[in-house]
Structures are given as structure tokens and as C-alpha cells.
Length: 541
Image (cartoon, rainbow, N blue to C red):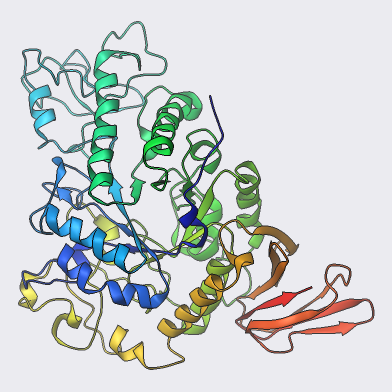
């Protein structure tokens, strides 16, 4: 398998903003966000310094899983607008020097998709083998798979990827069980037609103006696939096609395994995420992760004022992946996303969050800001909406102002997609816009810092200067060409100090961000002193 990866040049300085369309801005007063609403707020997104958008699913859907159950890949859901609105969004974003990635869900569809309805029929037809069905409706268990029983007239049960309403598309089995003839190889006609259709869908939106895709559950396609080698082979085929026909189109995976997604699959970028990454969880949400990978009811996140966190929980995992994919693609570390509860602002003040953003904007790869995290939106305790369950409280409407419905919508409160945060002192864009010390403007300054220094952008070299388990600060440097930037992070509510080797750099060229005079010469070395909850970025030589 070819493992070289060409990357769109624009990813080098990309800073992404994730928009959950239901909750961003309602342009027509029906209580739900829409594409014209996003267009109306593009200047705001650009004002942050973000030059790329990841748009959560906006295709036709019954919304049993908030759009991650697609019923028509070629049409925008009416509640969000039209295909023409999507085209206009791409055009308006491009006019501002911004890119837009669509969320692509191809491991499964909705049960309402016409393909699946045809596949449910007892008589064979074009779509019979587009989904995975066993051959016995009385078999109640298929080890390793989720099965829905008695759903259709067809003699068998469909396999699902997640909810019952998300039947798995048939990309084949890497190692079919010869005792189960319904397990088709990847070379079978059904899986081959599905694979071609994925390419057709992508071509449709790329030709309309989309700049690429974030792919949901990217590793879920081929079944019985040890090491996900065959799934990666499929995505490598997609990568090679894109490189030839759409070389500036970006592919970002929800895989949380960069070694496979990027190294084998040819993705340009992969996330570190809560569901598969102990390291990511240990950074900001360890105390909330009980029962999940990385959960430790007695532990502390690294970004915790107690100072009891352990950066090595993150760094050991991160460096493994970073070294595996060096030069091939990028690791994305998001502030959060629509699947993560709680938001990063929970139990943190603006100083805490500023240090987190300093870290995110000076690490290699590509930062992602989940809408509202730049103003410190909180998580609400809400009943489930559209399959959100505990995630629902992190999907509430964007808080634009202190007007009715936080400026999100003119609809009556009871018609809103989700309730807005009505608590006194809730953060809003309007309240923070003209306050130079607000979180919003601190985030803007940190994005500007990243964008103005090549060493801090995606492919700048990364080297750990000081990191010890259970100790602070965390110190690293980034380098690109002749520029080297030293970054130091102290999330604790007390001052920290460490001696640095004087051979590493001879002088401070410029203090770029954070505490002044944090570095002082002592003999042949340096003493780094950081005040409580602080960080620095210094250009060195």
C-alpha cells in the first residue's frame, strides 16, 4: 500500500471553527439555525482569526441522531435551507479567504434512506447488497456486531454501526467467515458499488465548492478488519483520487488513531478524541471521564489549578502518534466538539482558559474551536434531543447578545431547537466584543500569534524542553526555518520555576506572549519563572 501523503497547502495555517448548524444562528425565526444564518455570521468567524469551518451534518435526515443519519446525501435538509444556500456559503467563505468542510457520514445511513428501504425488500434488487444483513431473522446475536431484529420483510436482520436507525453500509468483510455466506468480501459487487457511490457523493459537493470533508466514524467501514487495514486501503484509494482530481480538498478523520488514519489511510488530519484517547481526556476533562478511556475518579486533568495533573499522560501518547505521522499529516486537538460533555469552560475562569488556548494555538497540527468555546459557553443539564443524550447540554444555541434568546433567534422561546442559557452573567459575544481582557479577545490574540509566526503553524518542528510526570511547567519549542519559539505552560494556582539548559538557546529575541521577564540568565543556563495560571511564548535564538 502506498503510504506517501500529499497535503493541501492551505492546511499549514488553518485554524478551524466547528459549527453545529442547528444552534449557531437562526435567520428566519423558526427556532433552528440554518445556512443563511451561518453566512450572516461569517465575518464574526473570520474576526476570530479562524480561516476554516467544519460544518456538522446538514443533509436530509429524520434527525434521530442530529443528522448523523443521512436520508439523502445530495440534498441540504430543508430546515437548514437549500443546495443553493450551500453553494452561496462556499462562495461567501471563499470570498473571505475561508474554507468549509462538510461532515460526511458514510459508514451508515438513516433507515429512511431510499437505498435502505429498497434493501429491506424480500425480492432482490439493485440495493440488496448495499447494506449488511445476516441470513436468519431468528438469530438474535452476531458476536461483535449490533443487530436489529424483525425490522423488514427481508429474511434476515440488518447490522448497525451505532443507533438502531443507522444501518451499516456494506463495505465488505476483510476476513469473511466461511460459515456465514452473508459476510461478503470487499471485492463483492455490493461493496464495490457502495465504494463508488462514496466517490460520487464527494465529487458532487466538491464541484459545488466544498473544500473537503470531516469523515464521521472513518474507521467503521470494513468489518472483521484487524488493524483496520482494509478500511485504510479504501481511504487511501479515495486519497489518491482526490490528489489527482481535487488536490486542494482536505480529508479529516474521526478515527483518533493517526498512525492508521494518516499513515495508512492517507488522511491529511486525524483528531485526538475522548472516545479513544486517554491522553486527550487527561488534558482537560479527566475528572469528568469516569467510565470512559482515560477516566480516573481520583485523578486530575493537566489543566487544573491544583497542579496535580500529569502532562506525561498526554505526551507519551501524543509523541507516539506525532513521530509515526511526521511529514505525512497533522494531529488535531480540539477545544471540544458536539460529542464532548462538558465544555472546557466548566469550573474554569478566563485565566484558566487563556492558558489552555495558548497551548492549543502553539502545538503542532491544527487547532479546532467548538462554537461558543471562545466566549466560555457553559454546559446545561438538558433532556436528550435528537439522540444527544448527555451530549445535548453541549449543543445549546450560540450566545450572541443579551437580547431575547441570546440573539440566536426571534422565535418564541418554546420553539427553539434547544433552550438558551438563561443564567445571570452568561457569556455573550456582545458583552465581550469591546473588552480587551475578555476571553473572546484573548482567543483572538492567541490565534493572531499563531498566524503571525511560521514556527507555530501546522508543520513547525516540535521538541519537548521540559516535561516531568506530576511536575510543572510544561516547556516545548517550535521551529520553522530560522524561527524558534519557546512555549511554557503553568496551569497551577501557584508559581513554578525550572532551570533550562543554556546550550539550547543563547538569547531571547522577543517576548511574544504572556508574562514579561520570565526568563533570566544564571551562569551558563536560564531560570524560567512562571506566575500562577500563566504561560509564555518567546522567540529565541
